[in-house]
Image (tube, rainbow, N blue to C red; front, side, top):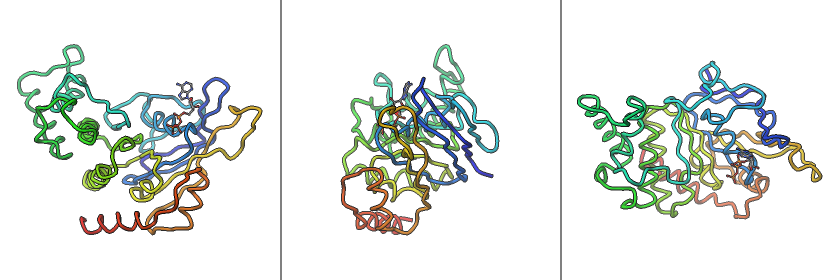
Length: 274
Ligand SMILES: Nc1ncnc2c1ncn2[C@@H]1O[C@H](COP(=O)(O)OP(=O)(O)OP(=O)(O)O)[C@@H](O)[C@H]1O
């Protein structure tokens, strides 16, 4: 069964149509990368998958059932901006979700429950390579480490679906490469279904098993809000395809030259490490 089904989905804010007639079936274990022009509705789409926004029309199904209308433990999310709490250590940041879920008033657990939450949080920190930083505060961590921490937070509830909104957009290229290795490793080992927005088409080609392009198919310059974006390309990824890469780059309006060598190089690294 498909992990996620999207049927004739529309989203409008007032008279402004952001997304129109989006249809999609995603299998469990897919790694879906999403690209599209700025402001075309990618984050809005992700927030609907998360349950933070309701569709204006259409249906969103998870495992054949209507997607819950609020964020739940089955979906984890990581945004570009670090979403960690500055006054808590890395360990407490990861524990906090569990503490708030089980003790909403105090935000703290005691005794055995606290030990279990702590052990699980340590396991998550290890999974993202932050076990040595458990006692540090976010200000003492680099940008890449803070994003690792945000990923550990998102994984704490064992989500089936991981939603990533440009999670590596603010990181240096070297750090991004490390994060690519980490996210592919977590995706494989934990059997996650991933949706990841990126502005970096190379990243989208390299990481995904499937690449979606969001774009408007119709536009009225007199009424910019009249039409929304939809999925204009849905590409199974595997082989590096120079022609396709160029076509999409132009459709999304990216200025860079195709850099297939980059993708090939990444794939080589990936193959060696797997
Ligand atoms: N809560 C809201 N109320 C009104 N308009 C909104 C709201 N959220 C988003 N929008 C509008 O919806 C459109 C799509 O925004 P969204 O953030 O989804 O685009 P995006 O493709 O993720 O952009 P970017 O790539 O720049 O992050 C924008 O015009 C934005 O102003």
